[in-house]
Length: 300
Image (cartoon, rainbow, N blue to C red; front, side, top):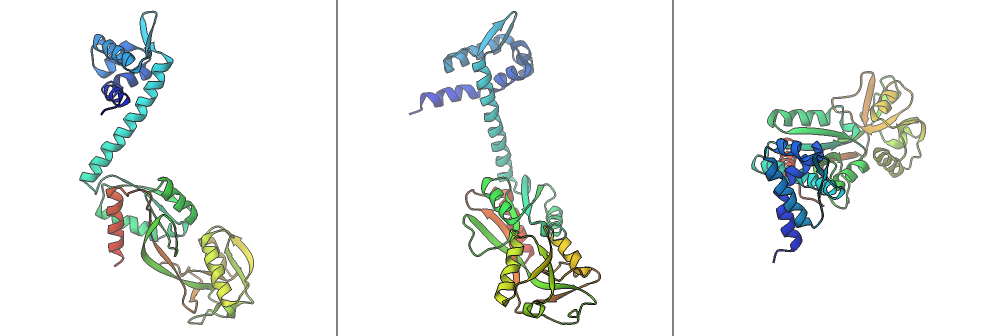
């Protein structure tokens, strides 16, 4: 059985355009012109709305008919309904054509120099009609944005357990020691972290996920690193190490070391897994699922 509220809602939908036009234009005659109906029809629609809702939605002010406070409240609600309907129409079109639509793509700041741009360039060439909005943030911020729907998919580090997150690996970044070319260990093919224990290090600030991963490597090697400089940007750390300010432990740079530096693989071999993350708390739009499938295929 249809509820009274549902019946009222069905009657309201047919008149949302007029109600919103009243709120935008301020009076009945202008609203009627805006929606291209005779003023007599507009008057009848508003009278029917008032009866259905049970309160007066309009009032006469001089020679004009304007919305009451109750009418304004209902007009605002009508705007929200129209927005929801517009989203529904957009999603319906995307369901019919997964190559169109919009993706809000988040990625780690460390991915912004090459990895993310390369992936996006390839997808742009394959699916030029898809709109991409980009968001750079920390891992924790990306996960939060996935859960609240601010972003659709993220490129970030994969962790063994991440509640509410589904992830697929794209590639691995092996950890290296970054030093200038004239450093005493620059000629080595590999290096153990304990062999660098007397060095001064440069690294990321505490609290950053990559710093925690590096600290885990030091702890496993039984080393307590002495940091001379800490910053929030990976490429700044790499630059400081290149100029000899200190030694850095980082994922190897995609595309090779900076000019003037050497990147020596850490042994035992350790790496950071990078992949695509989506929230399991909401079903991905077809355009997002299509992107994830495409990106995974490119790495095979």
